[in-house]
Image (tube, rainbow, N blue to C red):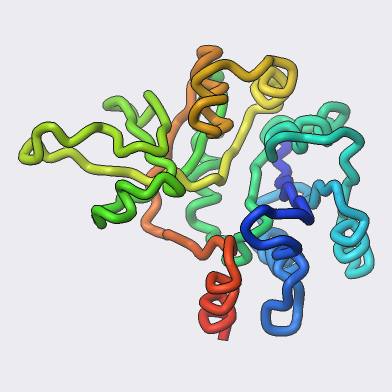
Length: 242
């Protein structure tokens, strides 16, 4: 299998515009992410996919590979799908541009899902983290996922799922981490299929896969990571980097 990583990178971000070009201890956030992804040695190739000439030049001027998006896109999956449409590749791993602390073991687990799937029953795989704090469970910025007995996703929501009508039944809550591994065909299907009401309501792109009957294998990880969504997150990342 040919396995590549794609890092979708928008310059404008509603909560922290230009965050990917912020300095993280001597290098920009996006360059840190690109270099960390390359350093895993898990991929045949790594690309940053962007709508910004600033980000494109940042990566290519440091010897990296970047692709400029041709169209405007609503989400990272669309941006990646456009970029891989004409590439010879089997599996595409989406690494978030604002997560410079790339964690090798979790990415390796995602790739193993497809190596063990000889019958090609799995369309995509993604990560989830067990969460216990009530504030995080109720936070709409935290996307939750529920799974079946074989860890296939049943649904994603910004609401607490399941609803805790009974609190003594041993339910565990899982946060969805936006790191995906796709079969190329599933990714292109996503690109071509229109958004349906559940995705539009929740504003969670992976719901589209479920609405069209795709199978998403969830992989549990213990690593929360650091997502740089605010200036405060950036300061935390700087301390952690040291």
